[in-house]
Length: 243
Length: 261
Image (spheres, one colour):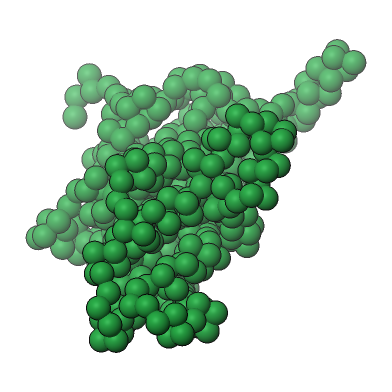
């Protein structure tokens, strides 16, 4: 664990050493703000909550989170530094966890910078701050789920563009599995899969948090989901590190 | 050191296949403390592959390698603690400073506080990186980058050093310094260096292994090696051994293909 934190620290500093951090944070905030206020009709709704804000969070994450994770392993491979990193006394899972934690901390920083909107609703009305807090927890977990996918995908290639596009695609699959488009198709073709697909939908789980429901089932889902992808990530790194 | 000390590096019937291609073919050797082994061979002969397997980075298809008695696969982390490895091309993180990347590696190796500073100071002094300590690595010349890689390998003063082309990209003065550095440490360590520069073998190595097409074709002292050719020059010995065995390997390969057909 200690080694993972050392890796995480280096990786997090890496984000801020390049323009990646500022570009990501600015685009995230602008996009999230524009969607909330213009398309989400934040003011016209006349409700003191962050419903309009949280509606768009998973979709913005879907697009931007793979941009955070694409470099994690792909760049390490392209530069050859994976050989330096993995010939240090460190286990693959420790490196995987460290990189994931760095990306997660980075997303948490971006998310924390949306605090003015929380202040705004509190000034304008009397929101249920408990619901807002659970929404933020849900957003953090959704980010983590997408990050875990993106990091695993990044380990497959040394090309960051491929890592990004594949990451978005795989995240999209797990975002929409509960949508009628998918479930209707599946229930016609393979009803068993439809039931499974509905349970794997990351956005459905997130919506529970947005409604203020923090259930053990959702928490277990996220922990398992993230754990699975980190495990897969470790397997990929082990199998393909020298490829 | 007594005669009884077991070899620090033990390679036993190590083989690496990529599909049908055999990059390293059943090689075995040992390196004891005090030895500097020059690992020679043409490009693609399997030098880097062998070194990667020794560093635990690449799993062998068959055979084993041990560093200070620790198997590089089964007891990988313990083996890597004993090892300083300079990968081919000396890769480092370009956006980090020299001190930054050294600190990172030192922390992973378990150093902190005053120990860490002392280690860093030692490594920087040994590789003469003082003037560029705070520069991002991407701004450094090729020679400096190589020395950063060397500093990373030396950082924890390991008993075993595996250096893949440590002097590549250095100017003649820097090469001289690097050789002095290696010679200075030789008594206390087992060192393997791969190189294309044959004069280097004479200058620093106590023993040389030549591999061609994945197989060991010579394993003796540089002097004995030179005596193999009437000219007494290592270049000639190298050319004769590696072209002859490469030709034989190609012939054997075409033979097996014919047999298969």
